[in-house]
Image 1 (cartoon, helix red, strand yellow):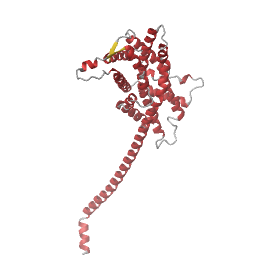
Image 2: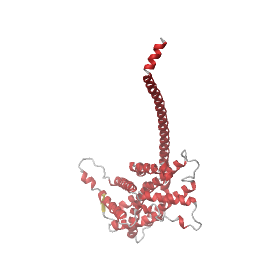
Image 3: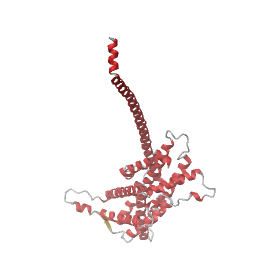
Image 4: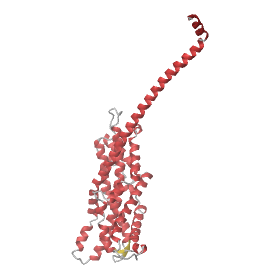
Length: 361
């Protein structure tokens, strides 16, 4: 029995060797496949955790952006009101001065100027802080990521403070220059309009459109200049030389300028300006409502023809700054903060500066 079995094995030796090789190969291939699947699952789990952590950090950063914008609105409003002080003119009118008409003309220009400046500067503040805080947020994510191994931080606290202090340009020289340009545009548009002349909402909207066109197309400067000083070597002029923090800050500022000069930034800022002026017109429209009627005899065309004397529109325009630059979330500010284009742009900025390959650049 055993000899016949052995003879069978000898006759089919090659088949047994081949079968053994196949079985062994399949076994080791199965083990290798299990190992690869396990490694792939571990890699996917690690990437998922990293992505979830990154998403959580991004969303937290956006909440910080919103809170920062709201905290900056009172100093912005104060800066505008201090330079375009219509309240002093209003108080002067109450004394019934001899040059009453002249004061009213000044009040007309200042009221429109400060409201238009408030819309521009608030939109600029929202978009600029989105850029700055998402650049910083991206670098902070990398600084806190596993694998940095104690290398030099990309955004140490001193650099963050120095970099974010550049927002003072928008509240200082940039704002002053913006006021000059807007005031000239308001003067050209409304300077010859009589205080007694009545304007409908459509006509008021046209006036604001003319003012915007001159500010955005007629100025020698781009809108980005009002947000960030164009002197790239401001820190380089320090007599004591550049520190490592200065170099990091200059790098951040240059990266910010690149963002401000990008077509995407212009698109987002224009979207905010469009929404901002639309919301302003919505607010003004509340004062152009006709008196209630008891019969449906007033057509839509007549409703749209409701008009007010310019002298009555001035106080309405003058008070809009308190709604536009309000630290309490108003419809105006919420429209900007919750704008989908702003959110998408912020995500793109954060994605760019939180990507690990940035460390290699």
